[in-house]
Length: 338
Image 1: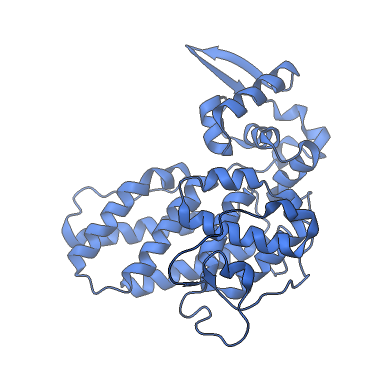
Image 2: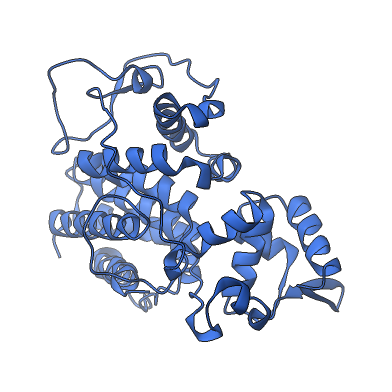
């Protein structure tokens, strides 16, 4: 498959996917999907802010959703997820600052990381917005992004907590935005029978110390079971204890999905596809770069249940087809409705 075709198809499917996820969470948009997996709103937000630079309407509707439903978003998790991601943190800070400007209840979201040096960066890529005439949005400008002034659409609604995809919001309404709701979500939906604190910390994007304290408290309360497996303490939860509280049945609990590694890999793949389209690389150099990319992010894709293609015997230019099949496999996972 030609590079340009793969790039366009991946971008189109990722945008369609993000629209469908947010539409199930209260954003103004139509979708027929009813996914059976539990969303990770912070991981989805970070991913969307990057891919939606190709779709200004999606970007601005997500801003409106953030303004309307910001009380359900964990800024601490966003900070943790962008700790080593300067570009992601800057874009996230701009979105949070805009939401705070348009909702007084979110005033505490304003960030001190606003000093920028050098040229302004267009927020939307070519084909997304291009040049514009009119007033720039000051909130994005102070974070280094040039874009037209954006006003809230006021079309977003609160997420329906009864939908499986919105389990996280129901738990946050019960337990708040801290680690407790994330730990419960993980233990309720994980396909693994038991897990140590380190694994749970990585999945929830909270520190191991924070997660440990939460697990001990839940164990002391008798709602999480703990035991020693060798020299490691592991935890599990009986979903049956929670179904009455959540007004659901065990079989109707949503499935888990490793959204953090999945979105990390997909973001890097799409960014590389966009970047590579600007260069006239030889087929050999392109295949070599694709191999390096999958070497770096293959484990993330596997964590998200992507069935990676067999690359044995693929040499030189032949590796490009391996890469195409890997991207297809990743998109196939997203295409599946939960």
